[in-house]
Length: 256
Ligand SMILES: *Cc1c(COP(=O)(O)O)cnc(C)c1O
Image 1 (cartoon, rainbow, N blue to C red):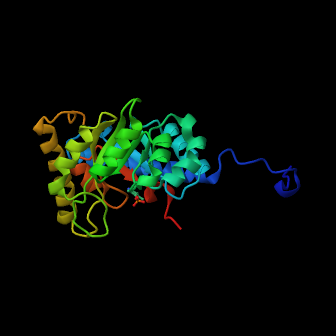
Image 2 (tube, rainbow, N blue to C red):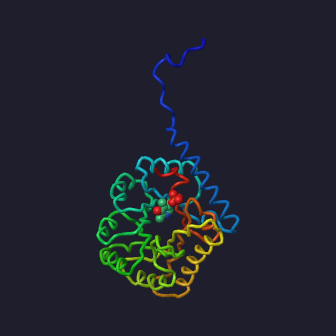
Image 3 (cartoon, rainbow, N blue to C red):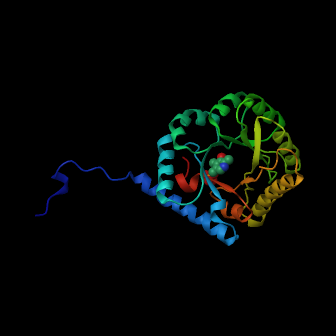
């Protein structure tokens, strides 16, 4: 006998919230993009980590994305990144048990250093020696904090970061802080539709890193990371050597 589902009793909850399915589909697509770009560049797909850029997303959504990533069982290192210290403070407690490194990928104001040190496993947008010194000083006596130097490869005035010609000396200043460990470099790609322009910017970051590594300056041996590439340009970044791509929109949808 055919029963009318509407009157057969209370509806069973869906096995997964709709958003999980959607997150899983989007994440799978991002992983496929990274894999393809790595293969085309002759690189190992596992050499590129995925940092979820979680600005404006709430903790349950971030947890759902992490669960979706784990369900996909892709052999790719996953990191979390926030732009603002306030968002780290607000969401950090609800994310701590995930066991993922929490990166501060946005600019850090001097008056937020203590809060950043409380929540960040890495600070990826250091753009001045003063900030590096303050971070190092406050970190003293604990395991060194992982730090990246942010470089403005495009020269666009709206972008944070040290100019490429100043990057090596800032990197040396970070490396000289006993409380800090220089682990690499971050940039935000040129805002351009011309792939040559975008790639040139990413190649410039790679050149900065290679020069710093080759300098043999004290404390620079671990500066291997290139955090570059976002939703719109991650293929170019992977082609130019990105070890971390930072993706928000392609995973979570457009920010409203
Ligand atoms: C928002 C943001 C991203 C991710 O950008 P999408 O285009 O949404 O992928 C990456 N890096 C930084 C520093 C960001 O602020």
